Length: 355
Image (cartoon, rainbow, N blue to C red; front, side):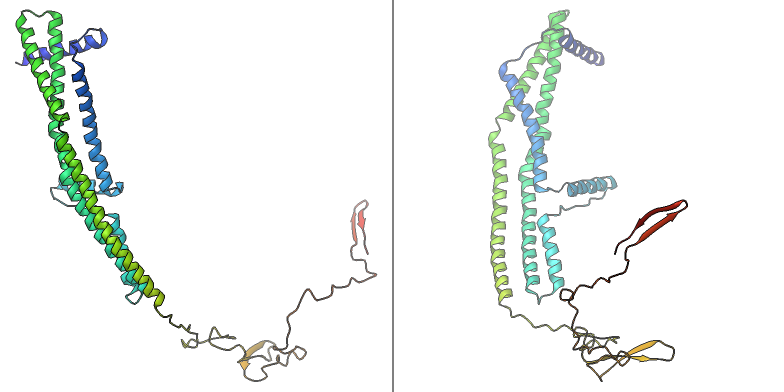
């Protein structure tokens, strides 16, 4: 048996190389069979790509998908089943709103609105999880079963048909001893041809089941969006109510505290912002024997400068300087104001003068 199998493999390899390089003609199959092969190949690609794109639709974040795959692989290696849930974006945003809404406090209408919207997004995330389970059970699992069983079986029959066709053509080309070998090869070739044709036909004619899976997918999407629509309608009404509540709430009066209210020691002239009136204290220096001045404040002589500056006007009567009303300074006459004379060894190099 082992030698017969090896001989058969040698015959197939010989026939294949003869057809590819030697130009030998192999047994040609009809046009219908070739068309079924083409449609079957398209179906194989379709099922694989459809599963991939559906998972991307349900779980669009590639980083989260990679993390879940890594956790699943580590769990298999360690022998511990560890479930990893995909973080729905609605749930992540809802958790953020609820968390910071509670931190702001219930006395804030904005905080209450944040909590309401966050809870609505959480409900939408829960509905999305239900959609995921529905699609995986009623759409992805049938596709996976089709890929791992039906398509795998059809591709196996096609591969076997190709090998038996090569073996049959090789024996027929060589005019093997006795017609018995050729007859056996022909019977096996006909058997594989029948199985391959029936497998592809049943696969391609299974439209009812495949369309029912698409219908289940579309019904799940419709139910998901309808439930989300109801949640969003309620949310919009709640947001309008919160908006009216915030608009009708009376504005509270706020008086900012000063440093004096906080019992903080102060140094220097204070104004109304810091808690003291700028006119309530007077600026007066005290001359010490060491020649340095120290300054203090008192409640006397509020309108005048200290006595060390007798010619200075009072603080209240002082007017700021206006540069536009002042007359330009006059230039002194009879004075050489721009005279330059540069002398180096050997004489005067340059001289300039102006009056």
